[in-house]
Length: 210
Image (cartoon, rainbow, N blue to C red; front, side, top):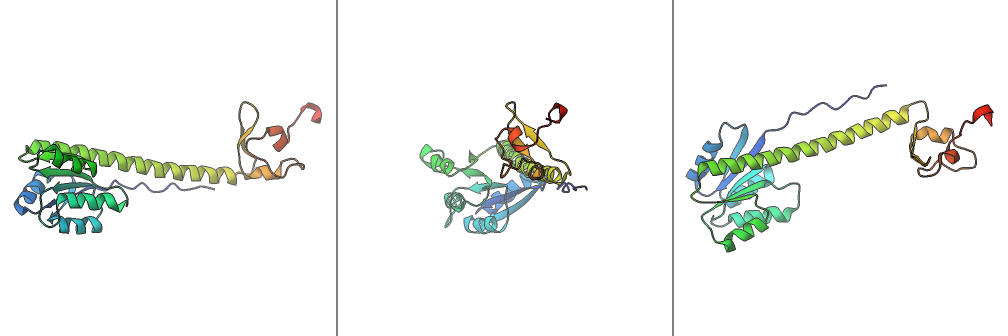
């Protein structure tokens, strides 16, 4: 009997959303990021940004702080209050430099904070760092899923084996057994329990058949 491994899934491209009420600035950021194997979308203002975030999974969010109606702080508050999945790595762009303005942004989980005017290389470096963090987290989740699948396949194969398979610790106590233990345990036991001594749970062969 064979158990097929699940097919490998190619990593999905990193998705970036730019939220800014200044269309010209949003386009300049999009052009700066173009050609780096990202999928890039632009939302005009905070209200449209929240709609896009609800509709589409986003890895990295580039968010202008000072927007009318729905500000960048409002967007961050909405993201932190949903509690659904992993929020995007948010890079906040703002002309505010006062600590009193920056602190609430960081408390709400912003990944980075850049003050305007910024050097394009600063933004690119911040995006690269955020993207790398996203990829590492995705890889970690993928490895956890693969390990769980491997454990399930291993348990299935061990329990499907025709023979008794069990493990003992140094004190002779059972630490693991497959389903065939019920076929060979002694009559005076109701079951073979992990943690009890092996001679009480499985027959022990002695020289001369004693």
